[in-house]
Amino acid sequence: MEFKLKTLTPIWTGGVEGKCDRLHETGIIGSLRWWYEALVRGLGGYACDPTSERKDERCELNQEKFHKAIKDGKNIQEALNEQICPVCQLFGCTGWGRKIKIIMNHPEIQNIDIGFKGEFTIKFKELKKLTDEEKWLLNETLYIIDRYGTIGARCTLKPSDKPYYRDYGIVRVEGKPDVGELESHFSKEQLKNYLARQREKFEKQGRAMPSEWPDLRYFIFAPDNGLDPNEYKQLQRLEPEFLRGEKGKANKFASFKIKKRFWGYTKADEYVFNRVCKELKKKD
Image (cartoon, rainbow, N blue to C red; front, side, top):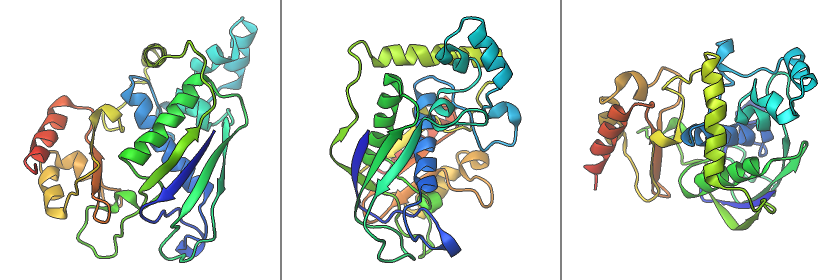
């Protein structure tokens, strides 16, 4: 799978001494995983939080249980489904190596204080064979980033009235991505049913998802509008504990000036989500 992209604002992935000397794989793959998690949850599936301090909220493949399941007649996919979420099956977790490696091709960064600007490619090299479901989800993840979201770091430092918060992370996918052929039997509904069944298994194990985890069903996208700091403060008052976040944590909304766009999310609560949507409609 290969995607050609063009930056509309600089991309920042960090580097030595706080300089963006190149596009770092860890910065890109971390961003891809975050959107992939939100997408899986949005389709009704379970996706863990690999950064959680709680062991029961992040996946780990117990090798003894895994090999016992294989010995008992289950195939590899069935044995994996019992222990680790669809996101960890692709991106890896303790006890299970990732299925993909990212290979990026881009020209030299001209200003390491600002970040990368220009055209580049992301190629997903298969370390383990991808399923059709994983190919579709990866392609959909890049579509969301292209049409509505952002990639890389420093994206959710805004909206802010601080002058040093530049626009970061907006890209455009150029041309038709090379995702390979999907089997004719593949369908989105089958994927949703598959994800729902696996989520039910995890819930029976006591692994329910907290409402604070990003879920695409509770995202708000405005690809042609911005959100200024005062408007964001109005939103924060609707749910201060969540939308305002914690000190040192990124905002739940990101807004951009150069390319009018904002995106954000609430916790998985219909009442809060609808209140935020109602407040935003006042902008129209």
